[in-house]
Image (tube, rainbow, N blue to C red; front, top):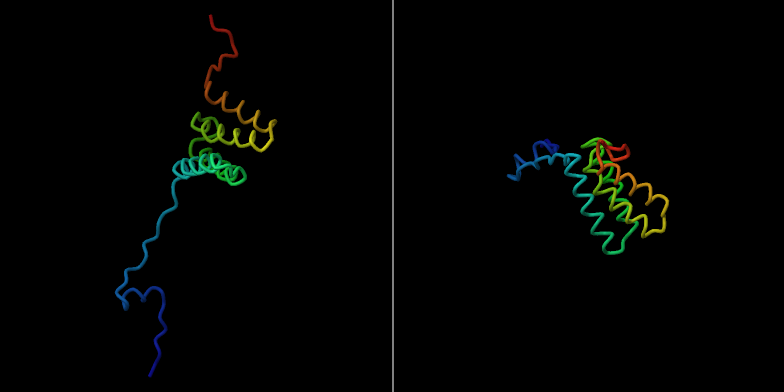
Amino acid sequence: MALHAQTPADAPARTGVPAPVPVPAPAPAQAGRAATALGAALAERGEHAAAERALRRAVRCCTAAYGPDDPRLAVPLRALGAVCVARGRLAEAEALLNRVLVLLAGPGDGTEEES
């Protein structure tokens, strides 16, 4: 009597259970929005270390999705700046929040006089 080695590929056929469908990874923009929401929620709960990790991931994802100069980066950067304030890292918070202002100002940021 020969034993048949069951492989994952033939297991569903013999058990009647469908094979799992691979779930694609979320797009960077979607991952960025989710990480921003998670970071904001964690910050509200006072879990600043976890919030910082989530928000740094959000910044990476949004940068990958939109580019480094897109105004949509302002949301996770602002939240990260607030977390840095809460953690006492004021110089880093200032740099992040200044970047938010630059992103939101866009082209022609008002540094030149208009006529």
